[in-house]
Length: 274
Image (cartoon, rainbow, N blue to C red; front, side, top):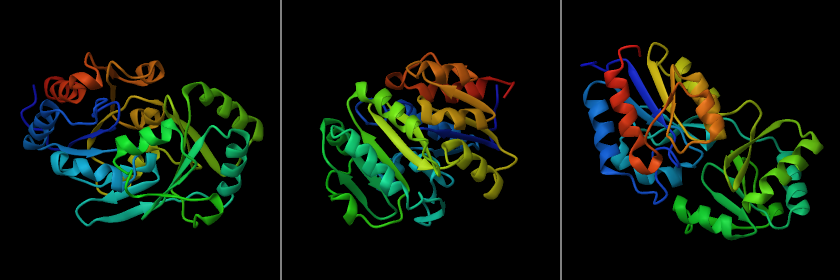
């Protein structure tokens, strides 16, 4: 059993890992993170959310170091309230979005930028996304042609059965300069090439003074795979996707509804092999 966690970093995904379906942090997870920090450990988050959506949890989580936003497209300093690093999508992404929306009129798109969120079209899944992310009042509904450049990522919201159809369409087009990732059963995203939570974690480790830390990372979905692989200890809740369980070093007994991160904190403290 460890008595000191100095030199340890725990980084967690939000939705589906730290956050249950209610999107309300549990007191047990908050207390476990506080315990981890009191023992000398550092805590941060890596999320697909933009700053405006993620910041509602900062008061309870108190990230100790820069956080990863937009599935790896942004590294953000919460203390200085500034973007430390980012990579934006290329201009040709606009045409890619136009082609996907033309082929699938049932799909809506959300364009995430540093100081604005734009929505094209509106369906049940996009309304749900705005509701759970707390961005209903700040999303700008617009036409694609009216949205300025400087996109961090694009999120397509759609019924679950459309994900494989859109993925097949994208594969047939052989788009270059961008990557695609599934981030939930109804969300499909465009990111800059070679950008992921994993690449952002590696950059955080190498460029911001955490190269000697032992890093534990937790996630639940496809967009967390690279981060789980990049960490020294990759973990996932019992409710994670099967592919994530395969790549994780530790599959927790608890789901995101049952304080999985609290269980992970205890695992780190009690496991002398990490």
